[in-house]
Image: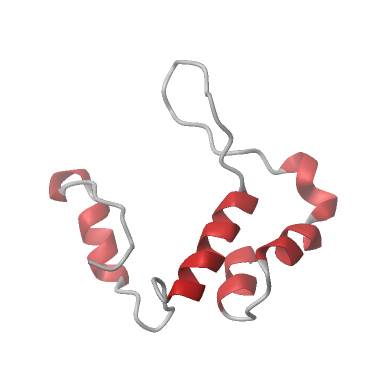
Length: 87
């Protein structure tokens, strides 16, 4: 929903984050599957901020995003490549 709000409704990521204020305590940061201590937090707020910047720079377009290509390259046997910036 937050990504929709950033991409389609063109809301600022800060406003999107504040919209979910009542759920902040329930939204856990990304945790790598490794066994060691996690040395960083990657929250939905961070993701929405990055998405907002990508849209602003023209790096992401809902109409121009090739989801089939993304899904192909995200598979381990095809390189496990998850970059979505141009080129």
